[in-house]
Amino acid sequence: MAASKEQILATLAMVGTPYGKPLPDAGVLSDIVVSDGKVFFSISVDAAAVKAWEPVRKAAEEAVRELPGVQSALVALTAERKAGATAPQPAASGRAARRPAHPADQTLPGIPGVEAVIAVASGKGGVGKSTTAVNLALGLRDLGLKVGMLDADIYGPSLPKLLAIKEKPQTIGGTRLKPIDRYGLTVMSIGFLIDEDTPMIWRGPMVMSAITQMLREVEWGKLDIMVVDMPPGTGDAQLTMAQQVPLKGAVIVSTPQDLALIDARRGVSMFKRVNVPVLGIVENMSYFLCPHCGERSDIFGHGGAHKEADRLGVPFLGEVPLHMSIREKSDAGLPVVATEPDGPHAKIYRDIAAKVWDQIKPGAAGGRAAPKIVIEA
Ligand SMILES: Nc1ncnc2c1ncn2[C@@H]1O[C@H](COP(=O)(O)OP(=O)(O)OP(=O)(O)O)[C@@H](O)[C@H]1O
Ligand SMILES: [Mg+2]
Image (cartoon, rainbow, N blue to C red):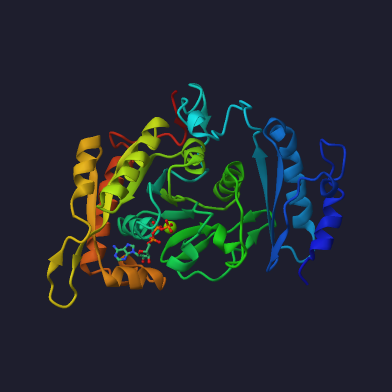
């Protein structure tokens, strides 16, 4: 029997809060989503009080997990900063975002067992970031690496679709989530936990809290590399994530049009600002090869991303054509690198993966061997 919202609220009534009222009466709870034994809700408090509320979040999560019929619980802590307030982080306005990323002495703890985390990002939505992330991860797998994928695009998680994952993750000992294995990749997405039809409203700090939990409360096991599919854009959520996740580098995906390139430039400068090395730019939908006559057309003006990479002084990683089979395979959960490994597209993605790995493998010039990274202001 699944736990009902009423049972959950009754349990949460036992959890005390800094406001001196039980949690359900403190006016901080979001709606409670219960789906298939998975429980999800958020606690929304003032940024200044976040520290005091973290134990409440934990207690709430633990209490709910104890309920019969609950397989897992994810409780996010939302911190909203009042207008004009100057909380140190996360950055919540464009102006704040231009401040130095971190105090000089701040270190980001690594994820136990995970050697390197890289982000796949784009300045603009819909450029093929998730498709690139999945095929890049598979290309890294083909180098003999143990690869994980985290879908950090909590606004529009796409890994359940791109990898045709319908099952829900199991919990280990009632507290940690076991990621899903697909095509040899170890995968986690918020899309595994919530209903596709459940509209989710996320605010910046809440995004981070959900992502931190997916990074740290999931049993990733030993991974050589984790590929993070970021939410599109260079807004506060992305910047916060670039600041808070121990990234070894970032891959920027762009289409060749000028408008996309302007956004890609923003992506590059965002990562540079927070001292995350940009591993390079991928030009996706670079050119169109007619599947019938084999004629090539540069629909979006091919080559722009290469020029842009040169101009910005970052590596150019490769060109992926606009091709029906990439779209069809991708959207059917059958990524080309896994399902057409001998085809021309798989080779392109594997070449991109090799260029990425060369930069971050242990001992590489730009790579950092230690699991901790230091971000200097
Ligand atoms: N090289 C390609 N050739 C053909 N179709 C592609 C290619 N790359 C991506 N697509 C298709 O374009 C659409 C958008 O791709 P995808 O979901 O990967 O983009 P995204 O940048 O992650 O989008 P979002 O911003 O919504 O997260 C999908 O239908 C995908 O199959
Ligand atoms: Mg996507």
